[in-house]
Amino acid sequence: MTLYVEFLFWLSVAFLVYTHIGYPIALGILSGLGAGSRAGEVRGERVGSFPSMTADDPEAEDGPLPMVSLIIAAYDEEEVIEAKVLNALALEYPRERLQVIVASDGSSDATVRVAREAGADLVLDLPRGGKIPAQNAAAAAAEGDLLAFSDANSVWESSALTELLEPFRDPRVGYVCGQVRFVGPDGGNLEGAYWRYEMRVRELESGLAGVTAGNGAIYAVRADQYIPLEPSGSHDLSFPFALAKQGSFSLYCPKARAEEKVVPGLEGELARKRRMMIGLWDIVFNEGMTDIRGYSPLYFFEIASHRLLRYLSPAFHLVAFLANAALLGQGPVYRVTFALQLLVLLAAIVGRWVPILPFRICRYYLLVTFSIALGFWDRWRKGPPGYWEKAVGTR
Image (cartoon, rainbow, N blue to C red):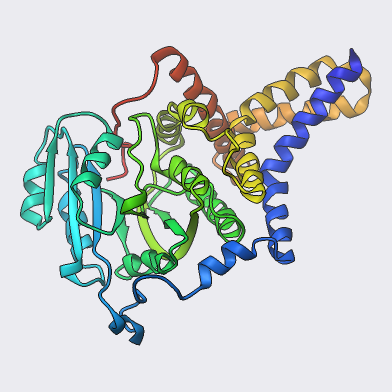
């Protein structure tokens, strides 16, 4: 029995260390060995059915640029929607080739009127149904060959759209996400620092078999490969693995940059992530993330490492803690590991009142990991998610 408990303890610890530290190292090693030559070639090739997106590229004269529909889902966004539409209209892309669509998900404020007055090409005044149904409706009404998506509170750099669309010159690319930076006072929230780590991991994935997730601030997909998802779905998580099964690559383009305000405070970040995680069960199991059919071996390695093991981290922590408690009488090594776990928990608690960096890191990690478990709990109690809410303080 003791050997079994020891096995569970060390296996859980190994998975936790691997998914957070070992996996990025493994990606770096594989990249150095050239294991991702296919995706790397896709990212760099100058092929495709339309010319370079870059405005000063002479090849842009060899044919028309693709029609692009930029879709902005909005729920009660009257305070930011005008600035967002004007930001979209100011992008470095031919105006006649850009369609700006605002899909209002049953907004009760002046979102629809303000969006129209700001110059959006199409404003959909939809009944309340959720973000995904609003995006589905906008995609169905879009005229673009490529569909770009953005949050209402995201601010894109002027060159972001041209950079975001550049990889689509290769017909094997189905989805591209850009780089999002979180700005403003964090109030103890380390989400900005976490995203710098996450973007580096996605850059490595992009050079191998493709990214395993995107972000809601800045991304694009081919119109003929858009997948109408259920309300519990998520473009960020569903599109990359679904398109991989169709033989398309999903890439990360760090030159396509956007900014959003960070949630001011860790409690607010926990609430935001908890809402996001409610639909995780449906994406992982009902939409087929765990179904390996259609994955290349390298992409399955990425999905298992970056997604499945990450989502299981609350269970690994619980098993490691309970197994360690049962092994306290088995030698000093287990007393040391148990003390380390208790110190991390204590640091996370103290971090609420003593905002020095080590305590802040422990608190952020604990609450973000806990949000996964809370999301599964909410999903079990309440069923699939439907409506969406804005994160407080991000407008």
